[in-house]
Length: 289
Image 1: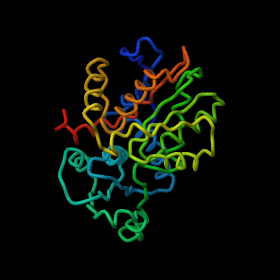
Image 2: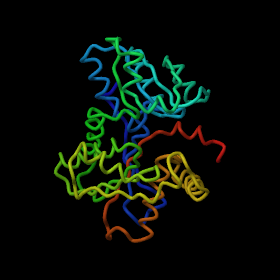
Image 3: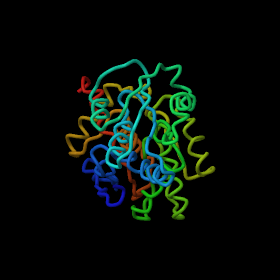
Image 4: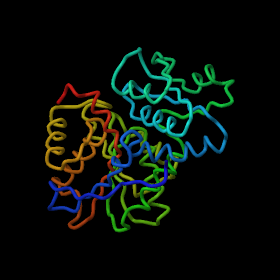
């Protein structure tokens, strides 16, 4: 399941004056998409090595991570359970989770904050259960995301990625260090006050002068949008023929365009954006289009 992948590089048409490519991790799989595929690769390997048969994880009602985990567990013959943050709801994402066999436990927001306690109370005596944090954040996920760098040309000057927890970014920076590259990693936090993500990244990689955070492109916060972002997203998709989502990748591509307009980069520098997938999240904002 985690062997052959299809993730080509694609030049952006609307940035023909610049060398901007996209690593199409969104094409790896329709449900185990992008960075979720990368994160789950070694998580599932550890589950199998420890002879576990039940993954227990966490997420919001429109979590791409939950769908990806449900699909991956279904294909691997594993049981899956998710603690879903907030009141009980029904939507397209959760319907997919249930179709893939995932058990959903809706949890009030206060209890949800202590995920280890939830796991212990419900599954502490279950020897088959394996804890996976929200978004798949862990060292195994970082290891999986680090492999992206080995699939890229070694002459990229700048790599961009959107960030919610910083796990994918940590993997990218780790891969840059492992390959001995001079590439600069640019991280676009998608939530307000995203400076803390730098600490999350550094906790996995150590401090680095090859890391830059751009914290002014959150458009109001996590899963928040503004008309300017939605207009950009619709124009981008129509011109490129490439779907992007309003929560993560739209904010990243908007940031790249804005920095190019401001002459942030030197002439002829090569820029690459990581398309981390997560496109099913579009369904949670379909009323905005």
